[in-house]
Length: 320
Image (cartoon, rainbow, N blue to C red):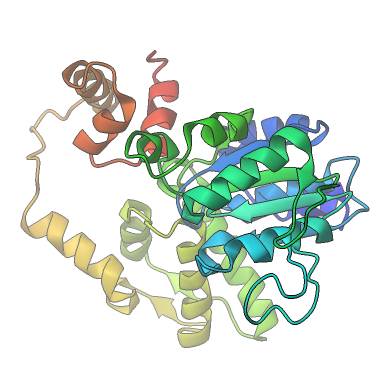
Protein backbone atom coordinates (compact mmCIF):
# COMPACT_ATOMS: atom_id res chain seq x y z
CA UNK A 1 0.00 0.00 0.00
CA UNK A 2 1.44 3.41 -0.99
CA UNK A 3 2.06 6.27 1.40
CA UNK A 4 -0.80 8.25 -0.18
CA UNK A 5 -3.16 5.28 0.20
CA UNK A 6 -2.46 4.73 3.89
CA UNK A 7 -2.79 8.42 4.75
CA UNK A 8 -6.02 8.54 2.75
CA UNK A 9 -7.43 5.94 5.17
CA UNK A 10 -6.91 8.27 8.14
CA UNK A 11 -10.00 10.46 7.88
CA UNK A 12 -10.19 13.82 9.62
CA UNK A 13 -11.22 17.44 9.22
CA UNK A 14 -9.95 18.38 12.67
CA UNK A 15 -7.08 20.92 12.71
CA UNK A 16 -5.76 19.20 15.85
CA UNK A 17 -5.53 15.80 14.19
CA UNK A 18 -4.31 17.24 10.88
CA UNK A 19 -1.39 18.75 12.81
CA UNK A 20 -0.62 15.31 14.27
CA UNK A 21 -0.66 13.75 10.80
CA UNK A 22 1.79 16.35 9.50
CA UNK A 23 4.13 15.30 12.30
CA UNK A 24 3.62 11.65 11.34
CA UNK A 25 4.68 12.39 7.77
CA UNK A 26 7.85 14.13 9.00
CA UNK A 27 8.74 11.33 11.43
CA UNK A 28 8.01 8.64 8.83
CA UNK A 29 10.97 9.77 6.73
CA UNK A 30 13.37 9.19 9.63
CA UNK A 31 14.69 6.06 11.32
CA UNK A 32 13.65 7.25 14.78
CA UNK A 33 12.11 4.87 17.28
CA UNK A 34 8.57 6.14 17.78
CA UNK A 35 6.05 5.81 20.60
CA UNK A 36 2.39 6.36 19.73
CA UNK A 37 0.20 7.38 22.65
CA UNK A 38 -3.57 7.54 22.71
CA UNK A 39 -6.76 6.02 24.01
CA UNK A 40 -8.11 2.78 22.62
CA UNK A 41 -9.72 3.28 19.22
CA UNK A 42 -7.92 6.50 18.28
CA UNK A 43 -6.09 4.93 15.30
CA UNK A 44 -2.68 3.98 16.68
CA UNK A 45 -2.24 1.02 14.33
CA UNK A 46 -3.19 3.11 11.28
CA UNK A 47 -0.59 5.70 12.28
CA UNK A 48 2.03 2.98 12.80
CA UNK A 49 1.31 1.63 9.31
CA UNK A 50 1.56 5.18 7.93
CA UNK A 51 4.99 5.58 9.56
CA UNK A 52 6.15 2.44 7.76
CA UNK A 53 4.50 3.35 4.47
CA UNK A 54 6.15 6.78 4.41
CA UNK A 55 9.62 5.46 5.22
CA UNK A 56 12.45 4.13 3.09
CA UNK A 57 11.46 0.71 4.44
CA UNK A 58 8.03 0.75 2.78
CA UNK A 59 8.85 -2.17 0.45
CA UNK A 60 10.17 -4.31 3.33
CA UNK A 61 8.06 -6.23 5.88
CA UNK A 62 5.66 -4.42 8.19
CA UNK A 63 4.98 -6.68 11.17
CA UNK A 64 2.33 -5.70 13.72
CA UNK A 65 1.78 -7.57 16.96
CA UNK A 66 -0.30 -6.91 20.07
CA UNK A 67 1.82 -7.56 23.16
CA UNK A 68 -1.31 -8.23 25.21
CA UNK A 69 -1.74 -11.50 23.30
CA UNK A 70 1.59 -12.90 24.54
CA UNK A 71 1.57 -15.33 27.43
CA UNK A 72 4.14 -14.20 29.99
CA UNK A 73 6.09 -17.46 29.75
CA UNK A 74 6.38 -17.40 25.95
CA UNK A 75 6.71 -13.68 25.18
CA UNK A 76 10.52 -13.77 25.01
CA UNK A 77 10.49 -16.78 22.73
CA UNK A 78 7.84 -15.29 20.46
CA UNK A 79 9.73 -12.02 20.04
CA UNK A 80 13.35 -13.18 19.97
CA UNK A 81 12.99 -16.78 18.83
CA UNK A 82 14.41 -19.97 20.29
CA UNK A 83 16.62 -22.90 19.42
CA UNK A 84 15.38 -26.45 19.37
CA UNK A 85 15.41 -27.90 22.88
CA UNK A 86 15.65 -24.48 24.59
CA UNK A 87 12.64 -25.40 26.73
CA UNK A 88 10.03 -28.13 26.97
CA UNK A 89 8.02 -28.12 23.76
CA UNK A 90 10.68 -26.36 21.64
CA UNK A 91 10.83 -29.10 19.01
CA UNK A 92 12.33 -26.95 16.25
CA UNK A 93 14.21 -23.68 15.79
CA UNK A 94 11.96 -20.61 15.68
CA UNK A 95 13.24 -17.33 14.23
CA UNK A 96 10.90 -15.05 16.21
CA UNK A 97 8.84 -11.99 15.36
CA UNK A 98 11.71 -9.49 15.38
CA UNK A 99 13.66 -11.42 12.74
CA UNK A 100 10.54 -11.60 10.57
CA UNK A 101 10.60 -7.77 10.36
CA UNK A 102 14.27 -7.62 9.26
CA UNK A 103 14.76 -4.65 6.95
CA UNK A 104 11.33 -3.28 7.78
CA UNK A 105 9.22 -2.03 10.66
CA UNK A 106 8.05 -3.81 13.80
CA UNK A 107 4.94 -2.39 15.48
CA UNK A 108 4.51 -3.44 19.10
CA UNK A 109 1.02 -2.44 20.20
CA UNK A 110 0.20 -2.34 23.93
CA UNK A 111 3.90 -2.44 24.81
CA UNK A 112 3.08 -1.78 28.47
CA UNK A 113 1.89 -5.41 28.73
CA UNK A 114 5.43 -6.81 28.34
CA UNK A 115 7.01 -8.22 31.50
CA UNK A 116 10.05 -6.50 33.00
CA UNK A 117 12.51 -9.24 31.87
CA UNK A 118 11.27 -8.98 28.27
CA UNK A 119 11.46 -5.19 28.50
CA UNK A 120 15.13 -5.53 29.48
CA UNK A 121 15.86 -7.72 26.47
CA UNK A 122 13.97 -5.35 24.16
CA UNK A 123 16.03 -2.44 25.49
CA UNK A 124 19.25 -4.30 24.69
CA UNK A 125 18.00 -4.88 21.14
CA UNK A 126 17.21 -1.17 20.71
CA UNK A 127 20.66 -0.20 21.97
CA UNK A 128 22.73 -2.76 20.06
CA UNK A 129 20.57 -3.90 17.15
CA UNK A 130 21.33 -7.50 18.19
CA UNK A 131 19.04 -10.27 19.38
CA UNK A 132 19.82 -13.48 21.19
CA UNK A 133 17.42 -16.38 20.80
CA UNK A 134 16.59 -18.57 23.77
CA UNK A 135 19.08 -21.44 23.89
CA UNK A 136 21.54 -19.69 21.55
CA UNK A 137 25.00 -18.42 22.48
CA UNK A 138 25.60 -16.14 19.53
CA UNK A 139 23.80 -12.80 19.07
CA UNK A 140 22.61 -11.82 15.60
CA UNK A 141 22.27 -8.32 14.16
CA UNK A 142 18.81 -7.45 12.81
CA UNK A 143 17.86 -4.24 10.99
CA UNK A 144 14.42 -3.28 12.32
CA UNK A 145 12.77 0.04 13.03
CA UNK A 146 10.61 -0.14 16.14
CA UNK A 147 7.29 1.63 16.52
CA UNK A 148 5.49 1.06 19.83
CA UNK A 149 2.08 2.10 21.12
CA UNK A 150 0.06 2.06 24.30
CA UNK A 151 -3.10 3.52 25.79
CA UNK A 152 -1.48 3.31 29.25
CA UNK A 153 0.34 6.08 31.11
CA UNK A 154 3.91 4.79 30.84
CA UNK A 155 5.33 7.55 33.04
CA UNK A 156 3.01 6.47 35.84
CA UNK A 157 3.92 2.81 35.31
CA UNK A 158 7.60 3.77 35.64
CA UNK A 159 6.85 5.40 38.99
CA UNK A 160 5.00 2.24 40.06
CA UNK A 161 7.96 0.06 39.03
CA UNK A 162 5.96 -1.75 36.36
CA UNK A 163 7.80 -0.33 33.34
CA UNK A 164 11.53 0.20 32.96
CA UNK A 165 12.54 3.87 33.02
CA UNK A 166 15.45 3.27 30.62
CA UNK A 167 13.16 1.60 28.08
CA UNK A 168 10.57 4.37 28.49
CA UNK A 169 13.13 7.05 27.63
CA UNK A 170 14.52 4.97 24.76
CA UNK A 171 11.04 4.64 23.26
CA UNK A 172 10.30 8.33 23.78
CA UNK A 173 12.71 9.47 21.05
CA UNK A 174 9.73 10.77 19.08
CA UNK A 175 6.37 10.49 20.89
CA UNK A 176 3.19 11.00 18.86
CA UNK A 177 0.03 11.70 20.84
CA UNK A 178 -3.30 10.97 19.17
CA UNK A 179 -6.20 13.11 20.41
CA UNK A 180 -9.40 11.38 21.51
CA UNK A 181 -12.41 11.72 19.22
CA UNK A 182 -14.18 14.06 21.67
CA UNK A 183 -11.29 16.54 21.20
CA UNK A 184 -11.44 16.44 17.40
CA UNK A 185 -13.82 19.32 16.70
CA UNK A 186 -16.07 18.74 13.71
CA UNK A 187 -14.99 15.14 13.16
CA UNK A 188 -17.89 13.34 14.85
CA UNK A 189 -20.63 14.35 12.37
CA UNK A 190 -18.29 14.19 9.39
CA UNK A 191 -16.87 10.77 10.23
CA UNK A 192 -20.30 9.34 11.02
CA UNK A 193 -21.56 10.43 7.60
CA UNK A 194 -18.53 8.88 5.85
CA UNK A 195 -18.80 5.63 7.78
CA UNK A 196 -22.54 5.32 7.09
CA UNK A 197 -21.93 5.93 3.38
CA UNK A 198 -19.22 3.25 3.39
CA UNK A 199 -21.49 0.68 5.05
CA UNK A 200 -24.51 1.60 2.93
CA UNK A 201 -22.44 0.81 -0.15
CA UNK A 202 -21.06 -2.38 1.37
CA UNK A 203 -24.49 -3.71 2.32
CA UNK A 204 -26.30 -2.22 -0.69
CA UNK A 205 -28.52 -0.31 1.75
CA UNK A 206 -29.95 3.18 2.01
CA UNK A 207 -28.58 5.81 4.34
CA UNK A 208 -30.42 6.30 7.65
CA UNK A 209 -31.71 9.83 8.34
CA UNK A 210 -30.72 11.16 11.77
CA UNK A 211 -33.00 13.66 13.49
CA UNK A 212 -31.51 16.84 14.93
CA UNK A 213 -32.14 15.50 18.45
CA UNK A 214 -30.30 12.26 17.71
CA UNK A 215 -27.38 14.19 16.23
CA UNK A 216 -27.20 16.29 19.38
CA UNK A 217 -26.97 13.19 21.57
CA UNK A 218 -24.26 11.75 19.33
CA UNK A 219 -22.22 14.97 19.49
CA UNK A 220 -22.41 15.09 23.29
CA UNK A 221 -21.43 11.46 23.82
CA UNK A 222 -17.89 11.18 25.30
CA UNK A 223 -16.93 8.35 22.90
CA UNK A 224 -14.74 6.26 25.23
CA UNK A 225 -14.16 3.85 22.34
CA UNK A 226 -13.24 6.75 20.04
CA UNK A 227 -13.32 6.25 16.24
CA UNK A 228 -13.77 2.49 16.58
CA UNK A 229 -16.93 3.03 18.63
CA UNK A 230 -18.25 5.61 16.14
CA UNK A 231 -17.60 3.27 13.22
CA UNK A 232 -19.49 0.47 14.99
CA UNK A 233 -22.43 2.84 15.52
CA UNK A 234 -22.47 3.72 11.82
CA UNK A 235 -22.55 0.05 10.83
CA UNK A 236 -25.33 -0.69 13.31
CA UNK A 237 -27.48 2.21 12.09
CA UNK A 238 -27.10 1.21 8.44
CA UNK A 239 -28.00 -2.43 9.15
CA UNK A 240 -30.96 -1.77 11.45
CA UNK A 241 -32.37 1.50 10.06
CA UNK A 242 -31.65 1.49 6.32
CA UNK A 243 -33.48 4.40 4.67
CA UNK A 244 -35.40 5.24 7.85
CA UNK A 245 -35.39 8.10 10.32
CA UNK A 246 -33.24 7.59 13.42
CA UNK A 247 -34.33 9.35 16.61
CA UNK A 248 -32.91 9.17 20.13
CA UNK A 249 -34.93 6.03 20.92
CA UNK A 250 -33.17 4.23 18.07
CA UNK A 251 -29.68 4.94 19.41
CA UNK A 252 -27.76 2.35 21.46
CA UNK A 253 -28.48 2.22 25.17
CA UNK A 254 -25.08 3.60 26.18
CA UNK A 255 -25.70 6.82 24.24
CA UNK A 256 -29.27 7.22 25.51
CA UNK A 257 -28.44 6.47 29.15
CA UNK A 258 -25.58 8.97 29.22
CA UNK A 259 -27.95 11.61 27.83
CA UNK A 260 -30.61 10.82 30.45
CA UNK A 261 -28.06 11.05 33.26
CA UNK A 262 -27.11 14.55 32.15
CA UNK A 263 -30.73 15.70 31.91
CA UNK A 264 -31.92 14.13 35.19
CA UNK A 265 -29.00 14.98 37.44
CA UNK A 266 -26.71 17.66 36.01
CA UNK A 267 -23.37 17.97 37.78
CA UNK A 268 -23.29 21.68 37.03
CA UNK A 269 -26.21 24.09 36.78
CA UNK A 270 -25.77 26.41 33.83
CA UNK A 271 -26.27 30.05 34.86
CA UNK A 272 -29.01 31.99 33.08
CA UNK A 273 -26.47 34.27 31.40
CA UNK A 274 -24.24 31.35 30.34
CA UNK A 275 -20.51 30.80 30.92
CA UNK A 276 -17.18 31.10 29.14
CA UNK A 277 -16.51 27.36 28.81
CA UNK A 278 -12.93 27.73 27.57
CA UNK A 279 -12.06 30.04 30.47
CA UNK A 280 -13.45 27.49 32.95
CA UNK A 281 -11.54 24.64 31.31
CA UNK A 282 -8.28 26.61 31.32
CA UNK A 283 -8.77 27.58 34.96
CA UNK A 284 -9.44 23.96 36.03
CA UNK A 285 -6.33 22.76 34.23
CA UNK A 286 -4.21 25.35 36.05
CA UNK A 287 -5.80 24.50 39.40
CA UNK A 288 -5.13 20.78 38.91
CA UNK A 289 -1.47 21.45 38.12
CA UNK A 290 -1.12 23.77 41.10
CA UNK A 291 -2.71 21.25 43.47
CA UNK A 292 -0.39 18.44 42.34
CA UNK A 293 2.77 20.54 42.27
CA UNK A 294 2.99 20.24 38.49
CA UNK A 295 2.62 16.44 38.36
CA UNK A 296 0.69 16.02 35.12
CA UNK A 297 -0.32 12.40 35.67
CA UNK A 298 -1.91 13.18 39.05
CA UNK A 299 -3.45 16.39 37.71
CA UNK A 300 -5.07 14.41 34.89
CA UNK A 301 -6.58 11.99 37.43
CA UNK A 302 -8.05 14.90 39.41
CA UNK A 303 -9.97 15.91 36.28
CA UNK A 304 -10.85 12.31 35.36
CA UNK A 305 -8.84 12.58 32.14
CA UNK A 306 -6.28 10.31 30.55
CA UNK A 307 -2.76 11.75 30.61
CA UNK A 308 -2.84 12.06 26.81
CA UNK A 309 -6.08 14.06 26.86
CA UNK A 310 -4.74 16.26 29.68
CA UNK A 311 -1.54 16.99 27.73
CA UNK A 312 -3.58 17.79 24.63
CA UNK A 313 -5.66 20.31 26.58
CA UNK A 314 -2.58 21.91 28.10
CA UNK A 315 -1.26 22.38 24.58
CA UNK A 316 -4.63 23.74 23.45
CA UNK A 317 -4.45 26.55 26.04
CA UNK A 318 -0.65 27.01 25.81
CA UNK A 319 -0.23 26.04 29.46
CA UNK A 320 3.31 25.01 30.37
